[in-house]
Length: 226
Image 1: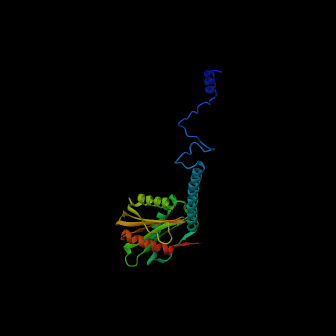
Image 2 (image 1 turned 30 degrees about the vertical axis):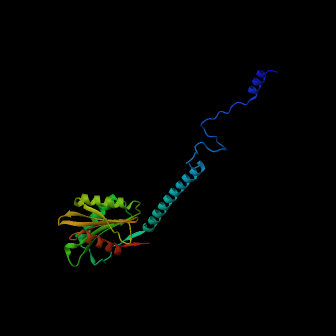
Image 3 (image 1 turned 90 degrees about the vertical axis):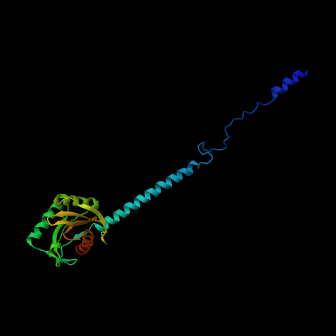
């Protein structure tokens, strides 16, 4: 047997060379997207699920708080006692007709179960009488209804300026005060609304801060909840 024949045979029997590429060799069933620096897909899914659940729980919590607030405030009654916050109710015909006029205007814009309108005299100064009117019903958006009431007053007395939120007191809800004008000049006007009531009052001869304080006192004397 010649050397040439042996050489050809040995070359033919050698295994094929392995083709090495730049692609890494993957072991097991790892997802191609789960490369270095990436969390495995199952872990990412758990993170996303946790975020969704947290957002859902936050939404449920907010709805729960809102529902509790509605349940707490919806059964409200407003009265017109003879005296309140150092003021005395004015039962004169002129006072009654003025209060009823504004009460009827309110009822035309907001569907109320019960409404009222009253003028309270200040024993120290007849020029500082307080006219208050409002009513009770279930209000889903108290601030919106209070703003409706302020727009009603704009139509009746002129533009309400400097409108701002003030503390509503222990009954909660929202209370706002501003300034408008009438026959006797500028005067403060304030109102409140919660999920069971809405009311507004005019305060001739009083600054806005003083009017807000007085309305909180009046509210304490005329509002009750069951």
